[in-house]
Length: 340
Image (cartoon, rainbow, N blue to C red; front, side):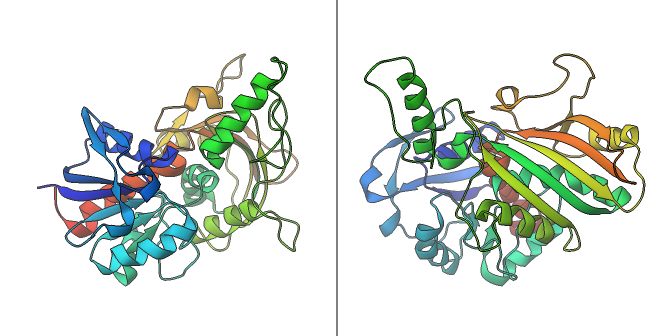
């Protein structure tokens, strides 16, 4: 017996990826509804070999539905998320709306699967920020072995993290460099993104950190361990899909780089590609379309007593969003709903 599943925001980048991953992983779906705003009503969406037309989210009745995967942003989720949860449908939300509420679980299934029990509080589970999700998959097995004290991370985040408008802006600005009359001024981003990097994702806070940087701090603490100290610098780069991170880790106990490499090789969701030769590492282009979080460039940091450096790459539309949401749904099915 399978589930009745609704994908909310099915016409967006993440919503379409959710449909792809549900099909690829053969999630046990008995009935599927694809929902969008009224302006997208009737838009066709693919689910495996099936084509579905979007239904109106505003009038949809969630009663009798098991799971709703939300990919519509915080403002809309504030309206429709509680409506679905009240109707008895478990909401798995990709926005930031519920991530920091103490009674709502924030889950990366490879890291804190037991947190799924918290769904009983409000019938809502939060999906973490894309940059956090891939990093904590790498941190958790190392933390279990040597207790991580501090993390310094610099991210190199693709434009797909800003949605379709971000991808379009990179494409149009790149064309404008070579085609006279097609120059494109920044609209989605604060500065030109083509052939450039922008050290600014999210609004600025009083501390000087951006909201994206604060998210990585708060979410790592909630998912892995509140005692871990995290400092982040988040940068937008002219890459269409795939986030990269340079991660510096300080541990309580000494952890040799070779042992760290072997720990990560056996860690769930992780693929180690770490050869000290030309091309012996993974770049975001190679991660696009894959499920894994790739780890490369594992090495000792000799400037502190117990330090490691590593390079972490993942498809942000997959592990950073849609894949993690579907994995939560799978976990929910095994632990809570007991169907399929």
